[in-house]
Amino acid sequence: MDNHVNPNGPDEVAHHHLFLEETGEFYRAAEILMARNIRIVKYSDEGHRSFPERHVYFRDVDGNAIEICDLYEDDQK
Image (tube, rainbow, N blue to C red; front, side, top):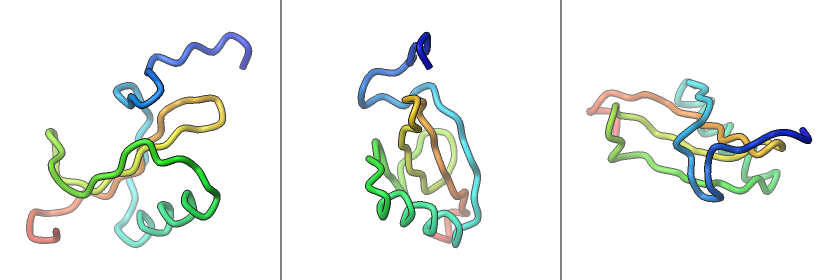
């Protein structure tokens, strides 16, 4: 997109779109990203400030930050 302005810096993900996945699909999605050599901007499975989740952030072809996450209960870690 010619006029697209990314609100994030190169390694920032503050402004992003979120896709919530089931545990099995989360890992499958992460594997697909890695298999396609899509750069992972951030990955974590603990320590999120808002809610317990596993999450992976990456950028789409237009540079938008995308998060795929799997919510889990504290006993599922």
